[in-house]
Amino acid sequence: MVSIRKQLVKGYVLLESLIATLLLSVITGLILCEVGKNRQEQIQSLRELEVLNTAKMAYDARINHLDLNGVSVEIRENSNGVSIFDGKKEAIRIEIKN
Image (cartoon, rainbow, N blue to C red; front, side, top):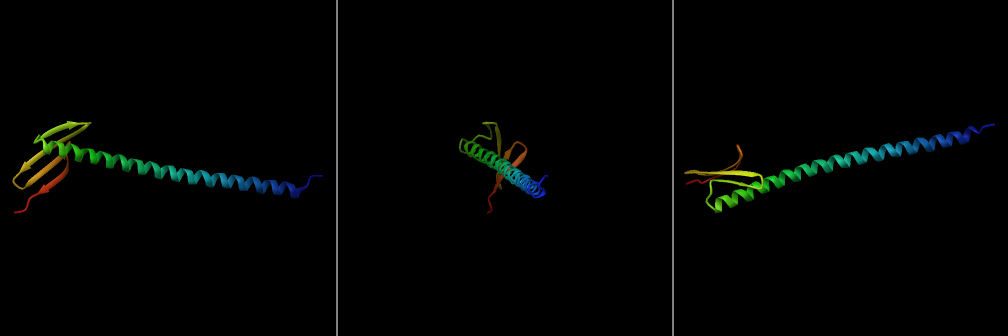
């Protein structure tokens, strides 16, 4: 005869291990997703920092256009202040109020 009690215990152990594995994989997936998002934000921050450093170098050297480390910065000065462009996008605008 086969003991039904022993088969039920083995079934519960198998079910618990499957649930634990599923839970572990879901938690791991969520952590990896957040790490990926954090890495993308860090890359964007480093890009913005590179633009600011390049713009500072160009402004200090009195150069209107500077290409450095894959960053292209253009500085436009007028009577109201200074605008710094990263490609076609305006990165910084400094206005002087009289």
